[in-house]
Image 1 (cartoon, rainbow, N blue to C red):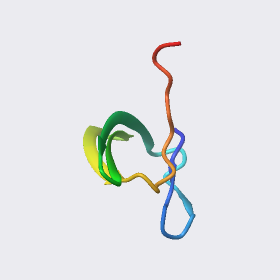
Image 2 (cartoon, rainbow, N blue to C red; image 1 turned 180 degrees about the vertical axis):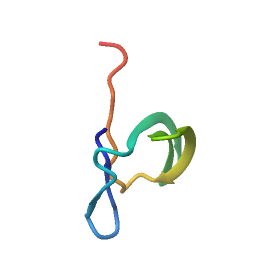
Image 3 (spheres, rainbow, N blue to C red; image 1 turned 60 degrees about the vertical axis):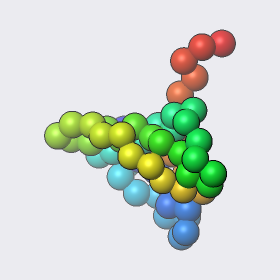
Image 4 (cartoon, one colour; image 1 turned 90 degrees about the vertical axis):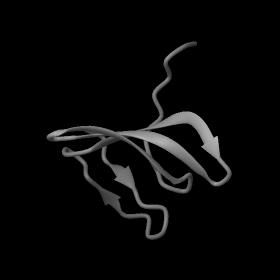
Length: 59
């Protein structure tokens, strides 16, 4: 899995364990994202400065 880059320190975390993908839902400086991890998945909200993956679902 891709992992993610922290917005505050720029560190790469979760590679091989987590996959986080932005959604198109925006709340000011935040956005929802889908987080995959070893035991499941969840939908969370985070600051858009975080370096999460983007997956194109339509051209």
